[in-house]
Image 1 (spheres, one colour):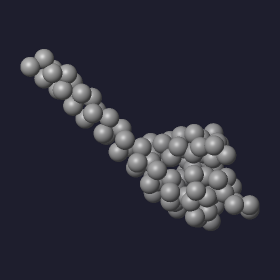
Image 2 (image 1 turned 90 degrees about the horizontal axis):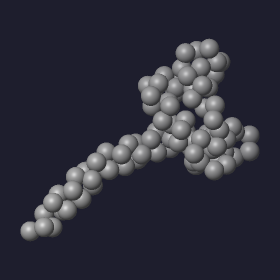
Image 3 (image 1 turned 135 degrees about the horizontal axis):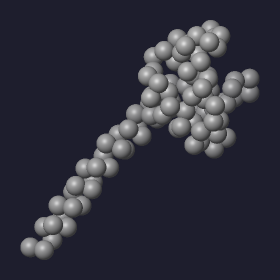
Length: 98
């Protein structure tokens, strides 16, 4: 009978971690869209800009989104994300090892 409170507490803790893991997975999906040009996890091939370990990605994406930074494609891609999503994508790439 004493296991019931512990079981309930563990179930509640597990339920709280599921949304966080789902959010991490969603950010990975958004970041995967960058792989065609910027490489897997932001480690680009020569000639392309790497994103792994960079800390200025959010600013650049927001500049592309606003149109203050010229682009051929990135301004269209950046407009597809909210400012919060851009911050999350930038944090993901900043955390990757170059």
